[in-house]
Image (cartoon, rainbow, N blue to C red; front, top):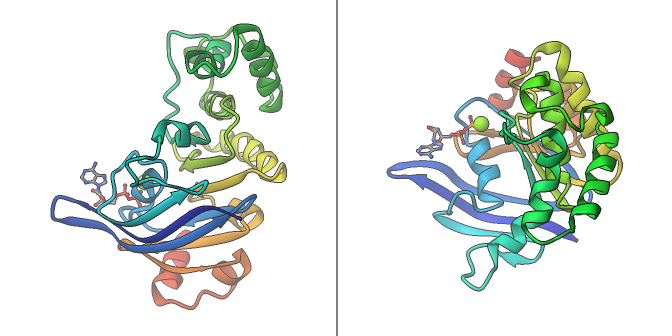
Length: 242
Ligand code: ADP
Ligand code: MG
């Protein structure tokens, strides 16, 4: 079953057309890595999938719900989509535990005790059981990002979107975050990941999408895209980053 179906997606900011007609489907449990040069529209594309951006044309269907349909309850759809950004956006005045418990309680998904138990489980999953009562300012970048992942998972989403989750990290912290994402992929989570970590994409992705100039220029298995790219623009991008 397709978790995400995108057809003819266009997005403009004023006169700047950033997405020029994107077609893509993501199946349940599939891990799709999106690569491409800066400014190619990767973040905008990801943001259209939970309607953080209103689209200019085409359709985006998530979990069978057409995001442009006025009858669609976008908040319900969003509850099923976890999003992790480059900058962790943790609540600075909440402890780690409270950061994770906040949304499920606030949105009436869980009672306090249940939320606490599941937050502790998630902290264990991301290797931070000892940081429950720490505040974000006391954590390293890699730890903050792992908390941000745990927080996104607290709503029990069935899709996770990652926008360059390791780009703001010192190099020695990249591995610990990728490892958590790798575990998640192994558990069958449906994931779309914008990343510059080509080694990770090669290892974890079921499919790699190369974007340039608002289009998907090339897509395929990691073996195809990295090992045997066919488009000039893919080849020259990979020459620069590999
Ligand atoms: P990428 O993530 O691939 O670097 P983005 O999706 O962030 O690319 O940006 C693609 C283009 O869209 C850029 O030219 C950027 O300036 C423009 N853009 C992105 N967000 C906005 C916005 N909120 N308002 C106006 N222009 C935007
Ligand atoms: Mg971006």
